Length: 167
Image 1 (cartoon, rainbow, N blue to C red):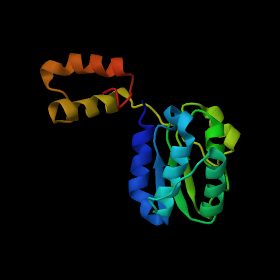
Image 2: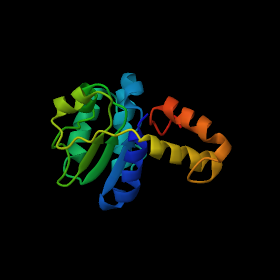
Image 3: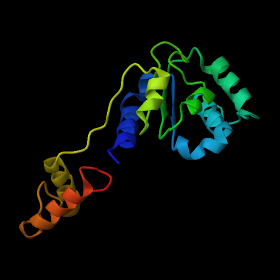
Image 4: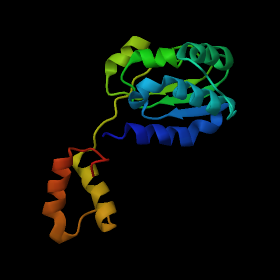
């Protein structure tokens, strides 16, 4: 939609080197039934150990708390819709070492309220002018549409409602 995932990936690319380790957990909402695999991914990525195995959600939560609690990490939890998932991943306000950063991407602001996050950022849609320029670069290789396509390009921009992914 509005570019939340793209923005988070850009942040990881730019600032990931400032942390001892990082992990990007994608499409968490769709993996609700398999939290153990998400816990394993979190531990593998942060500890850089491909052999991590977990047998239950409870065991995974304890392992994450025990092994990652003092590390300075960058973790992105993308597309989450239930605060309980954050609890199962042992992701809370002060779960990790000092100066760690946890980015939670959600469509449901209530998830953020439950977790008492420090800062919220609401991704904005693009203005019509920005959307037209983005479309023009991709469709015409120029900052504005060719003369004969201005009306069509404007209709496309209006239809997409400022959502970069739709363009």
